[in-house]
Image: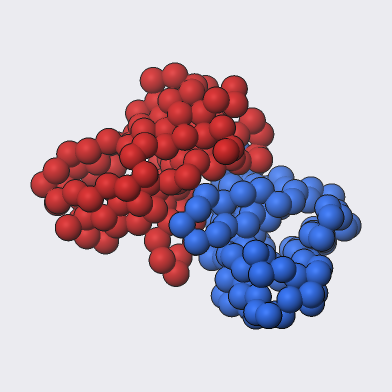
Amino acid sequence: ETGVTQTPRHLVMGMTNKKSLKCEQHLGHNAMYWYKQSAKKPLELMFVYNFKEQTENNSVPSRFSPECPNSSHLFLHLHTLQPEDSALYLCASSQGAHAYFGPGTRLTVT
Amino acid sequence: GQNIDQPTEMTATEGAIVQINCTYQTSGFNGLFWYQQHAGEAPTFLSYNVLDGLEEKGRFSSFLSRSKGYSYLLLKELQMKDSASYLCAVSDINQAGTALIFGKGTTLSVSS
């Protein structure tokens, strides 16, 4: 248990669906991140939030929309996804550079 | 941008020692991390180096040479449970602020 939780753990959605991934950290950190992990590829940084402000959007398609209502919660809203978006989506938080990861959401787009 | 290279796969036997290398190129180096990731699980922190030299933590040690852009993770007295992916990650203050940039990971298989 790292103090970072994610729901749901598994998600199957069609290309026309809208769904949201949720992340919550109980560590008092001021930075939160979304990473994407696909097979045979490195962890890809998607979004960075510092003190609820988005400071990085790593050229992510607009079908992924993040939301950070407070420093403990982070959402990733999904709509009209493609099959190639199927991956493990990891949330992390940090105070400084040391990142603590949640268990991830395994997303399958059909 | 950054470039982080590490071998894709390594194999070793129980009780042996294995060294996983990582080379990196970055403009605003702010530390290097090693994470362990078992299949289907989240990455977990192993070590952090920001100054040159060796950091030892039990069976695991990590080395850094900033001038060479090089690090290695040394695993001693290997156990079957050490079979996992080992991720090298760099913190670069000129890119993505506090976020870590990861290499592809090295899949280590330990056999009996």
